[in-house]
Image 1: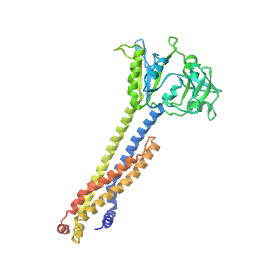
Image 2: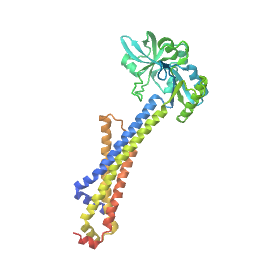
Image 3: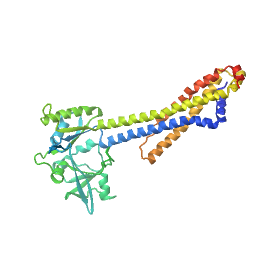
Image 4: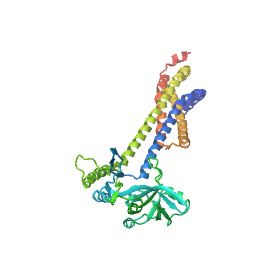
Length: 410
C-alpha cells in the first residue's frame, strides 16, 4: 500500500475520535512544555551567573588583609592591615601567570557637588585596578601612575553616582568635594550592574590610592604603605589555581610566616565560588528537566493505552483490510503513523506552550529564562521517539492478527 494513502487513513482514524486524541496528546504536551520551560530557567540562571562573573572580573583573585583579636573577639578579614603596596608589586613581578595586581583601600564618605550630595563607596586604587576588574570607561580617561605618585586630586565616577549628582549633565571636568577635599572628575566608568550579593557596583567613586590614604580614608602611620586588599588577575582561567598557590607561598615568605603558623591574609578565589554556583544551577536544571521528562513517559504510556484500545475497537476493520489484500506491514505502518502523529502534534503544541510559559515566567515572575534551541530539538525528537516506541507494540499486535479471527470478532 502507498505510504501516502496509509498516512491519510491513519489521520482519518484520529479525527474520528478528536476528544480522545486530544486527551492522549495531553501528556506529551505537558512533558515537552515542562522540559523546555525548566531547561530555560536553568539556562537563564547559568547565564546570569556568567554575567556576574563578567561584571566582577573573570580570572579574579582577591587577597584580603588578616584579622585582629580584641577582648577575645576575632574580627573579620581586613580588620588588620597586613598587606602592603609592595606585596602587590611583588605578586605582579614574581608570578608570571599574573596579569595585574592592584592594591586597594575601601571606605565610605559623603560627596558634594553644588547643592547635591550623595553617600557612596570610596575606592582608593592604582591604574591596575581597572585592568584587574576588566572595567572600561564610558568616557573620559583613567588616572595614571603619575596621578598616584603625585597624590592627584582626580576621580572616576560610577554611573549611579553620576545619575544622583549630575542627572543628564556632563560631569567631566566638574569639581566634587570628598571630605571637603576638591576632586576633578576625569572619567565615568562603564556600567557594571549588581554583584552576586546584590550590591550596586556602579555606586562607587575611585580615586588614586595615595590620595585616598593622605586626604580621605587615612592610613596607619606605622605602615603608610599598607592596604586592605589586593586584586589579582590571572592571565587565563586554568592558571588561577597556580596563582593562588604561588601568591600564598610568596606572601608567607614576605611576611616571615613560619611553617605551622596561620596566614595573616586570606585569598578568595571568586572563580571557584561562581563555578560552584554554576554547577548547582546546571544540576538543578538537569533535575528539573528529568522530572519534567517523566510527563513524556506518562504521555507515551497514554499513547500505548489508547492505541491498544483502538486496535481492539477496530479488530473487524483490520480483518476486513487483510481479507482484501492488506499486508501485515501495511497495518503496522498505519498504527505506527497514528501513534507518531499523536506524539508529533503533541510535541509541536508542547514546544509552543513551553516557549510561552518561559516568556510568561520571565515577564511576571522576574525569573531569568533563556530558550535553548538544543532543548527544543531534544524535546521534539524525544516526543517523536516516544510515539514510535510506545506505538510499536499496539501496531505489532494489530499486524499479527489472524484475518479470519479478526472478522469473527464482535
